[in-house]
Length: 179
Image (cartoon, rainbow, N blue to C red; front, side, top):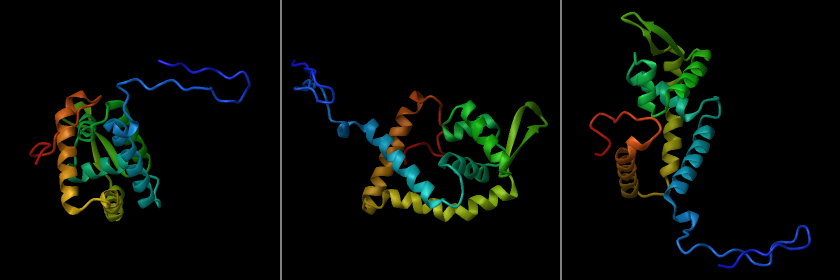
């Protein structure tokens, strides 16, 4: 395999570049790269759609979960989001500082903290629901209706089949990951 030959003059590129390994694949053929890039694109679209507020997709998702399932403890919230305990604590603290949620000690188990959206938190989710939906739709806009359905089914399947490998487990939705 040819090796790069360094130039003797500063700033001049090498005369030859190393050949790519026979098993090398383009970065555009790597699903992990594409999924990461798609996530970056989605976060940018989400932040743009909710530009009035300083809120991340994780923060909005957490508040949404608490509207659907009020009274979850911190560990359950972490599992619902698929993030670890340390990260959920930070997210909860930020939302609590903004008065969008409150945490109370469970009277039946003093070790548990129950997470509850405040009135402001509930109003926040309702106020920005349409903006969040627009970001989701914008992400999928390049696909036809059939392609969107297929894409979402395949994403759910990939997440479900690989869920046990993640750093933090994600609680499956009611009915499981796959339709």
